[in-house]
Amino acid sequence: MKHLAILRPKPGITAAQFGPHQIAEEREVWRLYTADIIRSMHWSGSPAAIDTVRIVIELETASTADAEAAIAGLPMIAAGLLASEIIPLSPWRPLEILFAK
Image (cartoon, rainbow, N blue to C red):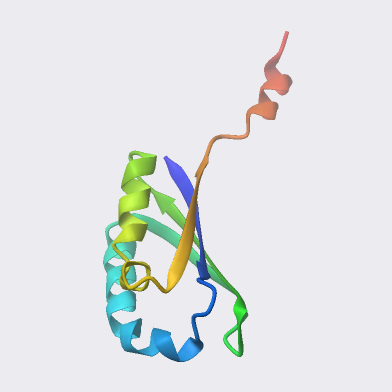
Protein backbone atom coordinates (compact mmCIF):
# COMPACT_ATOMS: atom_id res chain seq x y z
CA MET A 1 0.00 0.00 0.00
CA LYS A 2 1.42 3.37 -1.00
CA HIS A 3 1.40 6.41 1.28
CA LEU A 4 2.67 9.95 1.13
CA ALA A 5 4.06 11.49 4.26
CA ILE A 6 4.28 15.25 4.33
CA LEU A 7 6.55 16.59 7.05
CA ARG A 8 6.69 20.24 8.12
CA PRO A 9 8.64 22.00 10.86
CA LYS A 10 6.40 22.74 13.82
CA PRO A 11 5.73 26.43 14.53
CA GLY A 12 8.50 28.11 16.47
CA ILE A 13 11.16 25.56 15.55
CA THR A 14 14.44 27.01 14.28
CA ALA A 15 16.80 25.48 11.71
CA ALA A 16 19.50 25.15 14.39
CA GLN A 17 17.32 22.75 16.40
CA PHE A 18 17.56 20.15 13.64
CA GLY A 19 21.37 19.90 13.72
CA PRO A 20 21.78 17.56 16.69
CA HIS A 21 19.36 15.07 15.09
CA GLN A 22 20.66 15.03 11.50
CA ILE A 23 22.93 11.97 11.65
CA ALA A 24 20.38 9.86 13.53
CA GLU A 25 17.65 11.01 11.13
CA GLU A 26 19.62 10.07 8.03
CA ARG A 27 20.55 6.69 9.52
CA GLU A 28 16.88 5.89 10.13
CA VAL A 29 15.89 7.16 6.68
CA TRP A 30 18.62 4.93 5.18
CA ARG A 31 17.36 1.95 7.19
CA LEU A 32 13.81 2.50 5.93
CA TYR A 33 15.04 3.07 2.39
CA THR A 34 17.09 -0.14 2.30
CA ALA A 35 14.14 -2.02 3.83
CA ASP A 36 12.03 -0.92 0.81
CA ILE A 37 9.69 1.10 3.03
CA ILE A 38 10.77 4.54 1.83
CA ARG A 39 10.55 4.60 -1.96
CA SER A 40 11.41 8.24 -2.63
CA MET A 41 12.12 11.45 -0.74
CA HIS A 42 11.73 15.03 -1.89
CA TRP A 43 12.34 18.46 -0.42
CA SER A 44 10.86 21.87 -1.10
CA GLY A 45 11.39 25.25 0.47
CA SER A 46 14.46 26.90 1.91
CA PRO A 47 16.31 26.18 5.16
CA ALA A 48 16.81 29.94 5.38
CA ALA A 49 13.02 30.27 5.67
CA ILE A 50 12.31 27.18 7.78
CA ASP A 51 8.54 27.69 7.67
CA THR A 52 8.65 27.05 3.89
CA VAL A 53 10.28 23.62 4.22
CA ARG A 54 8.27 20.55 3.23
CA ILE A 55 9.58 17.01 3.07
CA VAL A 56 7.55 14.56 1.00
CA ILE A 57 8.23 10.86 1.46
CA GLU A 58 6.66 8.07 -0.57
CA LEU A 59 6.29 4.89 1.48
CA GLU A 60 5.27 1.34 0.65
CA THR A 61 3.82 -0.50 3.66
CA ALA A 62 1.25 -3.18 4.42
CA SER A 63 -1.04 -0.69 6.18
CA THR A 64 -1.51 2.94 7.11
CA ALA A 65 -0.61 2.01 10.68
CA ASP A 66 2.75 0.69 9.44
CA ALA A 67 3.38 3.93 7.51
CA GLU A 68 2.50 5.96 10.60
CA ALA A 69 4.85 3.85 12.72
CA ALA A 70 7.71 4.26 10.23
CA ILE A 71 7.33 8.05 10.25
CA ALA A 72 6.87 8.19 14.03
CA GLY A 73 10.23 6.41 14.37
CA LEU A 74 12.12 9.22 12.65
CA PRO A 75 14.26 11.02 15.24
CA MET A 76 13.09 14.50 14.22
CA ILE A 77 9.46 13.43 14.60
CA ALA A 78 10.23 11.80 17.95
CA ALA A 79 12.00 14.99 19.10
CA GLY A 80 8.89 17.04 18.31
CA LEU A 81 10.53 19.09 15.56
CA LEU A 82 8.33 18.00 12.67
CA ALA A 83 4.62 17.55 12.22
CA SER A 84 3.50 14.81 9.84
CA GLU A 85 0.54 14.05 7.65
CA ILE A 86 0.13 10.54 6.22
CA ILE A 87 -1.97 10.20 3.08
CA PRO A 88 -2.98 6.71 1.88
CA LEU A 89 -2.88 6.42 -1.91
CA SER A 90 -5.04 4.22 -4.11
CA PRO A 91 -4.84 3.30 -7.78
CA TRP A 92 -6.30 5.82 -10.22
CA ARG A 93 -9.82 4.42 -10.60
CA PRO A 94 -11.05 6.69 -13.44
CA LEU A 95 -9.04 4.49 -15.81
CA GLU A 96 -11.84 1.94 -15.38
CA ILE A 97 -13.89 3.96 -17.85
CA LEU A 98 -11.61 2.64 -20.60
CA PHE A 99 -12.94 -0.85 -19.93
CA ALA A 100 -16.63 -0.04 -19.38
CA LYS A 101 -19.01 -1.79 -21.76
